[in-house]
Image 1 (cartoon, rainbow, N blue to C red):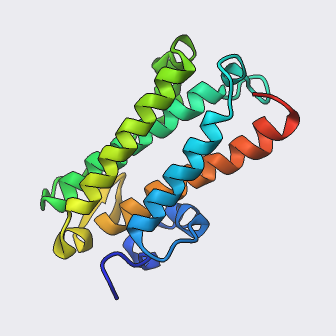
Image 2: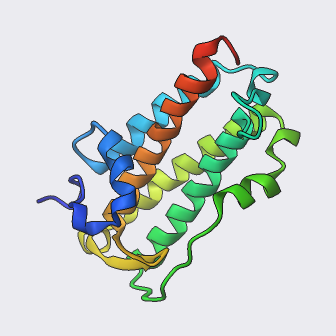
Length: 177
């Protein structure tokens, strides 16, 4: 098995399997690149005004959804870096809804959010390319579960695809954005 191959189910808590299952790529770098390109293409088709759309009361706006992707990508990258560098400190979880509320994403421009997401994802790709085989295979603890660095990369790609599916199904298929 190559360190870039799809992670085994035992390399991550079961909650994350749904994200990895969304990824069609056969190696980690292709998975990250494909999810990046799909997301960027989708985001570029959304207008400034449309980015404020919510598909139901109390649900995130499209801007908040993208801010959620930025926040999660940063957290996943940080966890990956800590584990890859053999830091055995258990890493905490986070409350995604509290992050969304505090983000003030709707006060930012759509262009600025997409630009930030794009820059961070490019940086994340470089981070994962910098990991050697041993770093990718390293296991740590995040959010009270064992997880490999490799799995974190696949989860990052799949998490993006998961939210693109929601964006397409619940926001964009109804003529908004």
